[in-house]
Amino acid sequence: MASVRPIRAMAAPAPKMTPASAPAKAVTPPAREPPRMSVRTARTAPTPPRPVAAANTLDASWNRKLTRGIVLPDSSIDLHGHTLASAHALLDQGLDRAIRRGDRVLLLVTGKPPRPDSERPHARGAIRAAVADWIAASRHADAIAAVRGAHPRHGGLGALYIVLRRPRCG
Image (cartoon, rainbow, N blue to C red; front, side, top):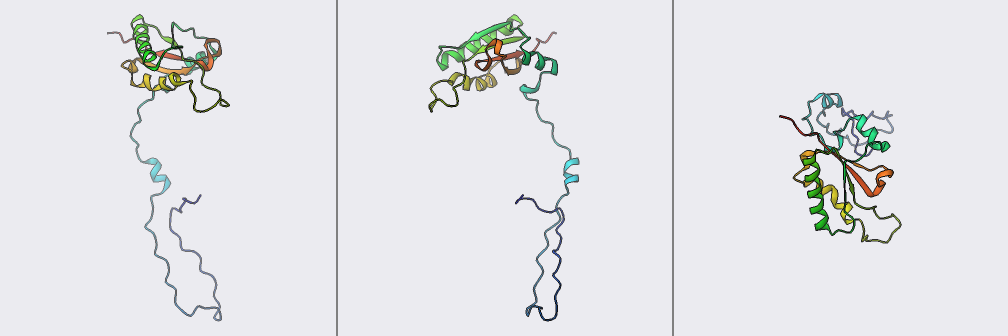
């Protein structure tokens, strides 16, 4: 609220003065601010189109199926027990295989994130924390339609669905 300013600068109403309470010195009125752009004008100005994020490329039926756990993954990759380097290489190889086979949904098992009441700094969860960056920077990023959390039936908090785009024909 402190940063809100009126659209038009309006002079404050002058207090009613009686001859006895008139100030001895003349007070100069404050300088007026230049008029600001109205909110209506700002909303109608054209905005450049934003790139579509990979998280929002699924339609409602896909989201509903993933949320309910109805979709069965075509293949899975388990990153348990791997170092960051070997997990990254395994993810890249697994994505490559899944795309070549024409899979639509890949289950990526990363392991559950640490509990909020666990000691800090966390020794667990390094792979899970790095997966989003790996996927975004992957050579297969354009083939990925979305990444969603898995249904408890498929691993819950410890797994992710990677939904792959349909291969382009022709």
